[in-house]
Amino acid sequence: VTVTDNNGCEAYASFTVTQPSAIEYSIATSDVSCPDENDGKIILSNVQGGASPWMVSLDGNSFQSSFNFENLTGGTHQVVVRDKNGCTVEEQVVLNEPAPWNISLGNDTSIVFGDDILLVPGIFGSPVGNVQLSWLDLDCDTCSTRLVEPPVTTSYYITAVDENRCIFEDF
Image 1 (cartoon, rainbow, N blue to C red):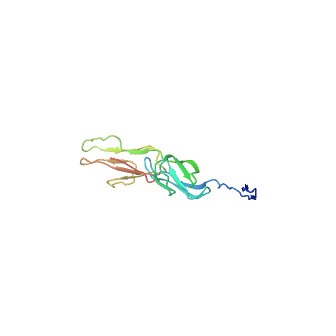
Image 2: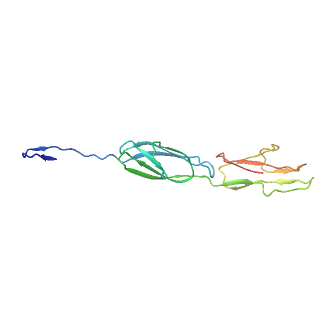
Image 3: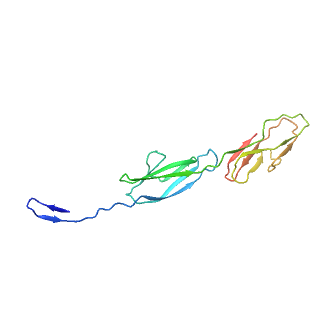
């Protein structure tokens, strides 16, 4: 740069304009544990580049200084990191959600005193891993089926828990 004053005197100087490096970060996710739950997480760390401080927005909501987002549903989420100069970087983050499933003992059934009935629970959908069954009356807590001959009006309850600890029940 050359500067000339009114007397024609010149001064010379040079300088370098530097641009901050691109905004970068690490991202960790925790998928949703059970169908229709909201326990997913997105956590940003090691934010660098641009000009600090950085702010983060999730799904178009207000920018915040915390890089942790919890209680999220499954699906695609938009993460935007913004530096103090207003420069941004965006990323789509997918939180997976297990497929829906449930357990059913079928339609309610009435039987005549002295008769018996075989209770066969049906698991519909796709639970994660093995499913543990338990019957409320505890007569046969781990039985997958039950042959019952109730002496009085009785309701039977079954609970199913998959490896993600998703719980479904029927009665």
